[in-house]
Length: 400
Picture 1 (tube, rainbow, N blue to C red):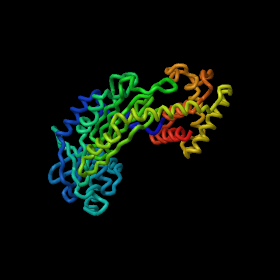
Picture 2: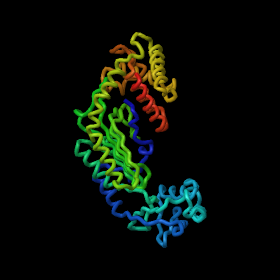
Picture 3: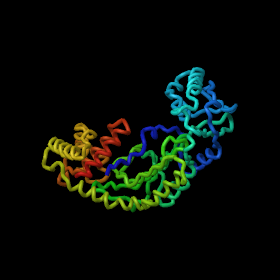
Picture 4: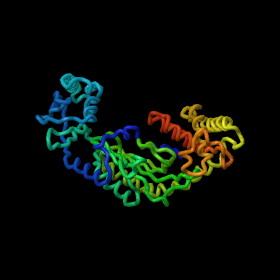
């Protein structure tokens, strides 16, 4: 449980409407159209010049004007040693002048523009081409449409469906995202027979996330995992990572996509989730048997005892820093809910103040893991902090 199946940060919760797709066909149409408008140009610093445009900086390459995306502009800025934010906040005139001065100074010097660089352009029907990215000669591009056809669609044929990003509207706002920088597909298995029972009655579901970037923003990634639930920002908790595959966009004898497909086949594909079932059940069984606070104690005694027990295990696992006392105490109060709940739904609806009557022997380590993770998801503002707590809980369970 909680072996870092974290997927993405809060940015997914604020994606604009034109980056969200309600079905796989709409996503395919968008990325296929973008692929059809794409072309590459060789790049040389002495052939490019920045110019002020109406809404920002534009580039002129041998007489062809192109408008950089925010990501492409940041790539150019970093290559010449300018902070990306500086170019964005300066007026187009000042920003263009600063960029030209740095381009002339940097030229082909080491540490500047990548050798053999190419530009990825996207032609626009009603204006200049959009500059999406600047890549080195060793870059191996993976097109989003190829990823969807080779990975996403076969998984959907195997029973997976796009996850509902909104609990209130499960048939809308699905977890399918694409922009000029990246692709994100969060799939879940729809068949309850494929779910994994848990001690608190809320079964773990199978999930797979596939990510890619045609411009090198992220590597090509596939994560397969068990999970309890996730928030609208697609932060997953209450789960276990079965396999994590990542391929850098590096040119070679095989494309990054082919390399990832080979590795996915080597680990057994979807069988990797089935193969992790026994190990996950063993973790749950051990954690459920380890009682960290007795039923006969007062609520305050239970809270202290549970926090002390987990702190001891955290010290043994060398993750005490990521599980501060305040979080353990809050997790213990939430753990009482899991221990007192007599139905799966009660773990979501039972108030902590009413969680006083326990049907079992007390609070187990499993209850604490559930409670701490849930509290972390609610209280931690940053993705990294939540991921660290997930990792820490996983290590605590491993040493128990």
